[in-house]
Amino acid sequence: AVTECLNPLGNSNIFNTEVAYSEQAAVRPKEERDGGKEMESLPEFQLHKGRLGVTRVPDLSPTDLKQVSALGLIELTALFDILDLELKRNKGPKRKSTESRLFGVGLDTLVEQDQKFIGNTRVPLILQAIFMCIEKRGLEIQGILRISGSQTRIKNLQQRLEKGFYDGLFCWDEVHPHDASGLLKLFLRELPTPLLTTQYLPAFTAVQNIPDLKQRLQALNLLILILPEPNRSTLKALLEFLLKVTSRKEKNLMSLWNVSAILAPNLFLYLGGKNLDRGEKQLAEGTAGLVKAMTTYQDLLWTVPNFLVSQVRKLNENRTKRHPFPDHKLLNFLRRIHNDKERSER
Image (tube, rainbow, N blue to C red; front, side):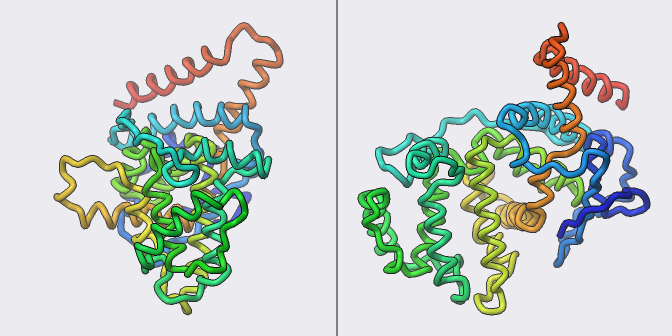
């Protein structure tokens, strides 16, 4: 769904990362936007390489990625403001972590304990094992992911995994793929905080209200960049798994829309309870559309925009030269620039 190109001119399907997304939104005529129509097949975008080429998330050091995250949040705030969306961030309580070793344990804790076994792992080993179980024997089974298997067996499997997973005593060959898909959904539901994080889940949900597809992708791109590392890596692994499932859709009868609609409720858990009964169908379709977009355009969404790469380079140059303009002051200066632009546009 994404290719690379050198010339961004004269093509509305060019995804340009040279210019800040908020600046593009400020000058783009409303009549050029797609009006929010849900397309059966999503269009292909060409990623403009620009003078800096293409930078992927894994290309950055942890220090640079931290700076990208901070700058990305500033840009997301500006983009939401131009699109007349409120950037709400939840501070609600997270679920209490359980005494278990796998289910109900935070991603950061899981990854930290897993790194004692595999030093460079970024995705919980239990989740990788579930993916492998389904990929090995379940990709061509009709209704995979849609059919969750026996709840009694799934509960029993959960208990056995808690006891024997790290000891190497658990045999995955005995697990039916439908039960494994049930374990996958159970794992996601029981996370102490949702995969998309309690803090940014309202912002992810709000993206469905952006009428234009390209601007929805720009917002998702920024949101993914500001996710904590374990959440971002785990989300990427999940989306790659969904692509593998849909690649066998002629056998398993699971289209991209089907798997998106099934997984969406497990990702958008903390939507609040006030108006949950009103517009549930619209909300379900909107969040499924977001999962579909993230799955289709994941290569694009895990690209670091060149305008952010340029800003990080300036921060690093400033640090190297020991310029008397500290990084936190430069970030505050960039925030003021955004605020001044917003006032002038109003």
